[in-house]
Image 1: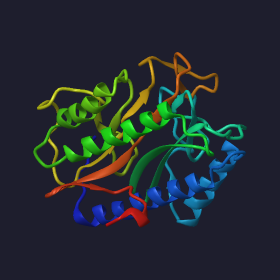
Image 2: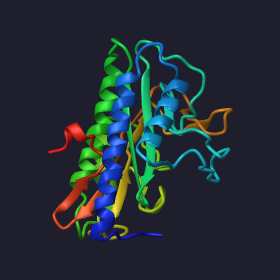
Image 3: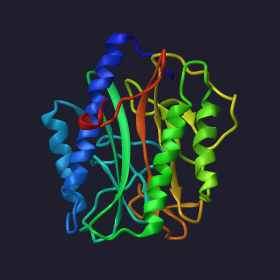
Image 4: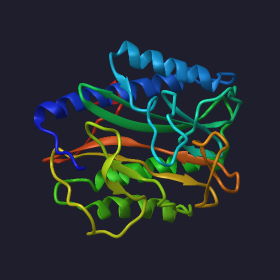
Length: 260
């Protein structure tokens, strides 16, 4: 299913997107050396509830997971990259943490992810990998406008990842979003320009470049959810929900303080 939102629903989407961005920034600020992943999940639950919103994850039970997910935020550390199931783990100095959050409010969902380093340690390779996913995300957003095709976005994202030397997996990628978290169209993190669905004003998309330092192969944890790099290398993941407008793309999941 592909949804096109009218102006009233788009306005609700702006509110949901800002909420996701703000919660992620709050969780990032609270995530310090010694913070337990289960505490981060509990904070996410409380912040979602206080906002009168609903988690898109807690009851999520797709075919690729051992569902339902049962938690409120994905917490992926170091070699974990996607669908990180919160568990009893205290963060260490230099850990690379990815938080991925999807929330619904007013009948519209938004989805975003951020990767960052915990504590004072700043391994150069990890910093570069995070920055590459952020640049790839920005390139995909810049390519998004009415009349563009999904392949144009995938090509823009993939060009940045490929030039940085990272293997690219197309097993998971971006997606449409609206009244539900995951919708068509699928947006691979590499592709050929001029191919795929033509973008229209009112379309919401979640773009999410993610990479693993030296492999494109994933393995699934014993928890049935957490996806890790097959080689144990570090990973990074950046995501925004955007709306296609008459003028281009509007980022919905920017935190309030980062909005123009």
